[in-house]
Image 1: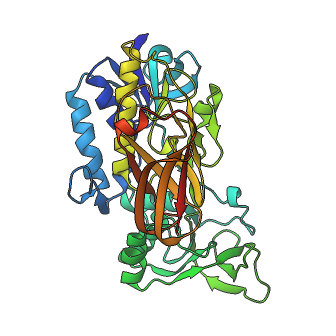
Image 2 (image 1 turned 180 degrees about the horizontal axis):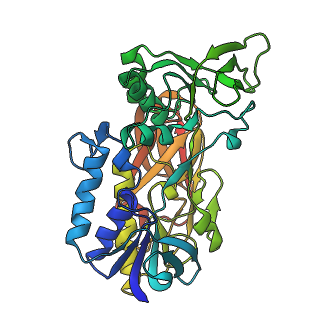
Image 3 (image 1 turned 135 degrees about the vertical axis):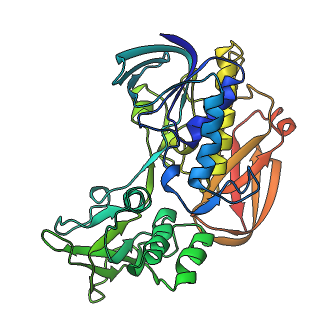
Length: 413
């Protein structure tokens, strides 16, 4: 079968991209789950939609807004549809229980598969393998959607946002959260979540600590924690055994990019996602990416905004408006910048550009500069920057027109 644009993934990014593209062309939305919304239906806490809707929504409310719009649109939605392969010519092989194996030819594709959690194996956590060890997202689903309580005495490893939110959630359900243990010397989540989820509930946060052993046979009996030094090596003599029946892992998220790699798209080792330009187009013409597939965002509003851009540009490509001369200007991370997205500028569309970047080290009263060939393009001041919190810099459309050489982003005191 043929269509103009195929969006892979029915979470917040896929929904926003599909809606935007459907304003201009025919769109098919493929989702491997039974329902649309991605991870949002299990995120029952407030904090979604602050920027887009100017009000505090829960995850299900935020998702439902887009799901309702999709239902009212002409988008061809196919749930329970697993994409098996994608090639560089926008040909997709997928399968579902209704049609079996399906081959789809599109003029453009938007990748919106989201991200996944790191597991115990990926952080090489030692010890036995008893029941009672969960990723934070799994525990969230068990409590919020299945009505199941994973444990009553809880240790949380890692201070990512979902882990912080689950520390509060366990406490509200009557469990005892002994503490949150973070390998790094700073929290891994947003400041607002540290305050609202830990400080407000007197849950201790232990920085520069990690779990060095897991004990228990059939059921988790406890963990051993220890302080780590500057090289993240456990310090002998600081070990402490904590009895618990539940260990929650909140040790980071990874962009879901098996399909992306499979069709030869250039990847960025710093973000774990594809290299994109300001149109969210990847190195393979006609394939776009958005949301947490590109890099892990702090808030869902930014996911939706990047998806709308990807959907709009994918639709223009499908209409035949995507063959403009592209300049392929590198956009490079400079001083105290871990990564910046987009990674290149094409100049294919005249539009304002939002740069998303993360710093390597926390700093106060900094100047963020975007320059090319020694010429300043944009400068922005920030009172505080921290590695876990995304920084955004806006480039006006007119400032991009005359850029000829590589662009560099620096964060300096």
